Image (tube, rainbow, N blue to C red; front, side, top):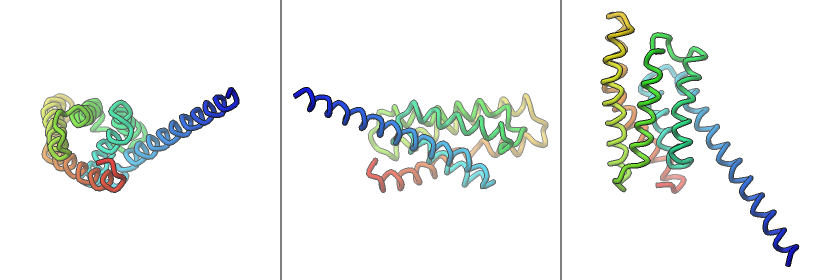
Length: 177
């Protein structure tokens, strides 16, 4: 009986270790995709991919890990020069906006996937639009401010919704929706 109990405990330990390794691998892949996405150079494509990664991260890893996935890429992208330095003052607000998207999606009382995505996307857009309006006027010249203001407006809502669609297709494929 003791031998059986020990063997069972060893199997549980191996199973937990394997599960942790899988979660770590998923976290690394999702974070990597979000870090590399800005290399594509197109805001609509990059934003859609990053938002899809955020929605997928919530579904696969949980909201806590998803928040980290939303923080790390912005910091790395700025640190290694993938984001233009003119966006540096907005990085904390982009991180907060990603966190709003994640938390609104994760904790929505709505059960319908699309309602959750629309609500989370709108809240991210609204926060980033209003916060960036203030920051842009404080830190940027008028010439640059106009371009950045457009980047932080309707494309944020569009890319979040598109990311929700991409995430839906992926999650449906892996039976998480």
